[in-house]
Image 1 (cartoon, rainbow, N blue to C red):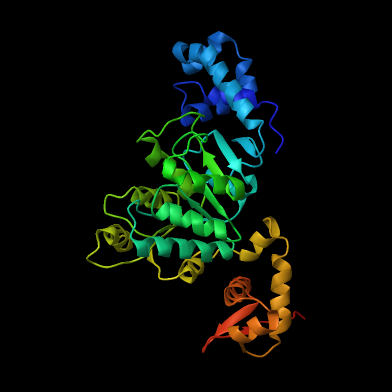
Image 2 (tube, one colour):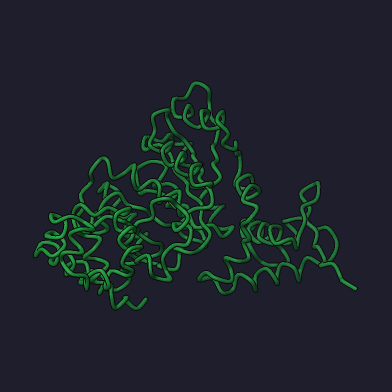
Length: 367
């Protein structure tokens, strides 16, 4: 992505202490792009943001921070995305408090591909971690990028599943993008930077401050079409993400568990309040009615996906057929065939029949 010629002015505005996202959006509405703001007389700016903020806006400290960010953005696969950029996530434009600037490291194309958030407890059970990784892998293979928060436990498992899928994963950080927290996830963060995307709204060097993590949760849910909570205690931060998702008009899903497990209490509370109980990835996909997996194949870095669909359709014939037979005919694994069948089913070209059989659907002819 070619940097915006006015990127320095965006950074200057966003890095000025005391100017939050809401204030910045108000200034943009009043003056236009940040470059136009810089051209305003000092008296006009002082009236708009106050004298202390104006002094900070033009301070050496802010200039140095801008220079550091520009240097960071000049490195390979490093991006600073502003509200004016085409790469800015369209789904974030729908939330009430979109950040003016985002720092991204990795695959910038993931920002505008279909996504689902998968979150849960840091102190996950072994089963919970397996569930998170398995759901993420299946949802990712169906074309949904997995969004989570790089925390220990469920988040980390979801990212691992996403990385192994065709749609990859986005980690939304509660720190500056140049800081890995927790440090135990350093290797995972490096893998995400290489094959997925690290994302943060916080300036470079921002340490792990407690109140920043609940704030970033609105971005986890905002990037996604739905939010799946795998395990959560009643006071879990994951419930904050779920509430953000509900407030943003996203679907909320929860996996039930034992009535005796504290890590199931949060999910059960969500289900009682209207979240959809899910037992499989298919349950999630069935609710995301606006999602078309074929759209992902057209837009993502998987140009042969459409060819694979055509291949499966070509060997199905017109009679009902089971997965084992398709595996033999196509020379693919059961998981690969099942993934392609799901994509075709979502696209209305295949239907599932009783007894584990599938049949090709012909498009209606119009006279």
